[in-house]
Length: 240
Ligand SMILES: Nc1ncnc2c1ncn2[C@@H]1O[C@H](COP(=O)(O)OP(=O)(O)O)[C@@H](O)[C@H]1O
Ligand SMILES: [Mg+2]
Image 1: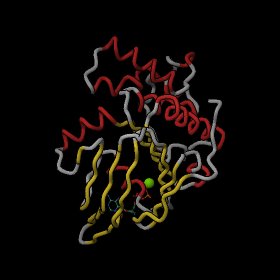
Image 2 (image 1 turned 30 degrees about the vertical axis):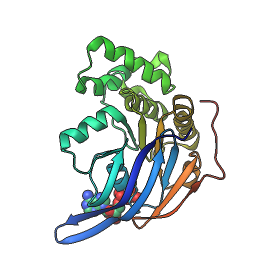
Image 3 (image 1 turned 30 degrees about the horizontal axis):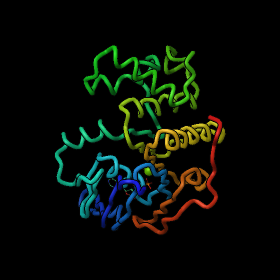
């Protein structure tokens, strides 16, 4: 059975204006991603990856072209409607993930649920489920954020992205600040979430070694797609 289309991007451009200067960060990109795919978007610094991620994550809208998420065009939605979509459907993981300082792991993970208006007792239950899914060690749930290693922090970041039970995870350079071994554990966690939970994962990176953990790699350069193909040297992490 063919999977439903999760993402449909058609002729999307994005032009930034700084003073009188216009800069086209996306010069017309089109692609679609099916539900349950694990896709890397790869390109050098300045190629437009984060710009594209902001559009896919409903944090920003295209200058021209269309973007549909789950069959719904998002270009005409209000800021409030975009915020609803983000809260309901998307989990974000960023490179420089800022946990609340001197605050426990549990409280950090429950925070998005406070904003979403989830009752207190349910918040804790859902935080525990998300932390377990991210592979975070249970004995550290009550540790404070300043008592954690880089790898543990990134697992908390993943748990925080998962706590709303999103169907799609968007990760922008999630291993950028990690050593190779810790980075592999984080990438293995994304593979597991994709494989076992059917979540759509979009991984943004400038590194080929990171991108090869995805099933499919979309190469971008100068705001254009240069190549879109299956990862022929896919690296699977089975023990996380
Ligand atoms: N808010 C902005 N205003 C002006 N220029 C921007 C803005 N955001 C990004 N750019 C420019 O757009 C280009 C692409 O940026 P970005 O999408 O962040 O690339 P990447 O994530 O691939 O490094 C860069 O040249 C950057 O300087
Ligand atoms: Mg970037």
